[in-house]
Image 1 (cartoon, rainbow, N blue to C red):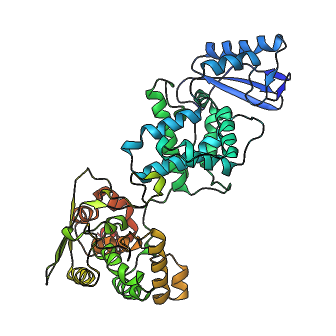
Image 2: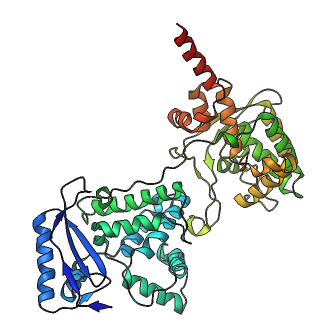
Image 3: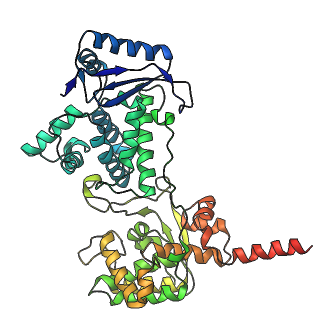
Length: 456
């Protein structure tokens, strides 16, 4: 612990950035300025009075925390759980109720927050060492934890010692440290807007849990003037292919590799012709399909098969069948499918049959295709069909863009938004917001109406 006797204490001031009345105690230890926010002016003045008394007695102040030795020991006794301890209990307490991808997302946010919310304790390990211990030990239930090496055990002991008390997040300075941490990637670059907003939402929910447990009176994030970066919430029309391009790509897919391409063609076709999410297509089973010899068919979706790191799944496998996105358990979604998709699925089943559990799409060994394998096949198919300029563009850059193309096509064909939303598994409001820029011809029609009105 680094200490100093150089202490300067200022008067209490009203916190102008707070929505509700609050007061800020300010002092300086060595070269570091400190502040702490209180609900009333009296509480802030009492806190500064304790600091002044400690300074008059000649106590040394800890540079990393800004506190005198007497108050530091008292704080340690009454501070409650550390941020590390509370974060772990937050993840483990929600484990049974959350999906594997949600667990992974929460842990990913905490990999940014926990290493940032620490005191200035000597011999700090490298950040990647801290994150490895968190990822493989701290943020997992006991029966999933990896054994630590001696070096990793030392890293964990440092983290347990250095982690700030959770109550320190009542200070605006500490909350801003947390917000800064979620605003950058692990290598210090500016994080994507959607990533920042997702991590901020997790931090908010974690602090709401602290409010629920009476650790905080209100959520400290509400006192901070901070705007998350604006995220893109609409589909980029440059990604949307037309029906001719879709057919060309689906024709090219079987030409990729020895077995992957021919086995994945029907799965990609489901994403385009039925607007399935990739994880929904991955769990499609023969019992879900009505495939007549002629005319339209139907699929009734029951489950999805998303991919996640196996440490976060219940089964310990990378793919795990679960309920449909945004749907209640056992709720289904019915989608009529056009004759072209009926024919493709019939050909696929005739050629490759189904897995013992009825799944249509699987590797030669019966497993599910990874997202990286699907992406590889898709990029190779794009290279067979597109020009160099198109390859460099976002046009159908991901298999998921087939779904965007399908929904855009349906909307532009005049299918009512309520029907499109039902087939897609969206709300109408989300559908209009996400696909607003993909509605071809809307601007021209609106311009015509305005011109008519101006001529009257």
